[in-house]
Structures are given as C-alpha cells and as structure tokens.
Amino acid sequence: MNAPSQEPADTPNNTLPNPLLGMILMVAAMFVVPFIDGIAKYLSTSYPLVQVVWARYFFHLLLMLPLTLYYHGARSLRPAATPLQLLRGLFLLGSTGFFFAALAYMPIADALSLIFISPFVVTVLSALFLGESVGPRRWTAVVIGFLGALIIIRPGLGVFSWASVLAMCAGLCYALYIVTTRQLANTGTPPLISLTATGVIGVLVTSCLLPFGWHTP
Image (tube, rainbow, N blue to C red):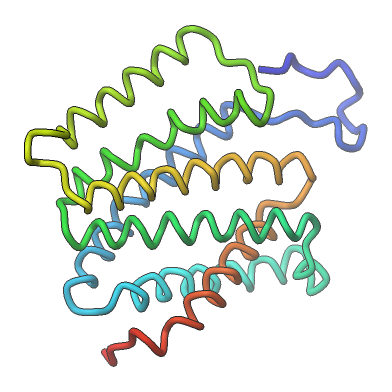
C-alpha cells in the first residue's frame, strides 16, 4: 500500500486512495448484494434470464443517469477511457448473467460461496497485471480460498454440476471487472460516470437480446 503523500493537500491528482473508505463502501455494497440475489432468484422462476438481467441494468441506469447528469452534466456521458469502460461493462454483464443463471439451478448460499472466489482471482490478477505487491499471507489466503471452493463443488463425488461452473464463471468475470475498475480509477474517471457507463452497456446489450426472451408481467 502506498505511503501517505507528503505533497500539499490541494495539489491536483495527488490524492491517494483511502483504503478505509474503500473497505467501508465495499462492505456497504456487499450488504445490498444478497437482496439483489434473492430478488433475482425469485424472478428467475417466472421470467426468462435475459429479462431478469435487463431489469437489473435498466433500474441501475434509471438511478445512476440522473445522478450523473446532476453532478457532472451532459458532457460526462462521453467518458474517457472508452475501450476500458466497454470492457469493464461487458465483464460485469457476464458476471451478472452467469450468476443469475446459476441462481436458477442452485441455492443462493452455494452460488455465493463459489462467486466469492473472485477476491482470490483479483489477488492473482493484481499481481500479474497491475504490478501490486502480494505478500506470502495473501498468497496463502488465495490457496485456502480455492481449497474452500473445491470443498463446495466436491469434484468427483457426483455433486459437481454445470450450475457450479456458471457460478465460478461469474466469479471470474467479476474479478476481471474489479481489475478493470482499478485501472479506470487510475485514469481519473469519476465513479458516477463509470457506474453510469456500466449501466448503459448492460441495457444496450440486453435490450438487443430481449426480443428473444420476454415474458409480459
């Protein structure tokens, strides 16, 4: 982790990430996730997968777009680092699609346990692609995390299913989403713009697929 900057506080682009704030925001986000998952599992019993994923992104965009326009103006809808934004949005869309598909065929607790291999994948990717330092304790946590995933899916014991593969693919996509988010943070792209771009990508892609999977409520 970087040491606190000794530069003046008002110098542009000298503000380093606040780890404590980041952890608080992540905990808050993870508190909301089970509610989203529960709603998705409930809806998946009555509606096609693509419609459930579309609804997730539609309401995401419905919330984020007014906030972005209010705080950053209409010009912010043309964000910087567009290729990276596109890639990031596709990774999150893949994670959402795989995970919602897994929820339709397995318990939420099992699906969550498998998707949470993502922190360990992020640790590996951050060392390989972001050049972040990963000490022995973190590598040990990575190994333990993967062993935990193997205990859940129990390959070779007749318990492993393709739904488990879907959940693990969701975890992989989410890990790639986190890594690209970290790269976007280094470009100075405001979080609201980044979140809105993710919503736009999700709505556009799922809207193209919606005619093939729509059930009128």
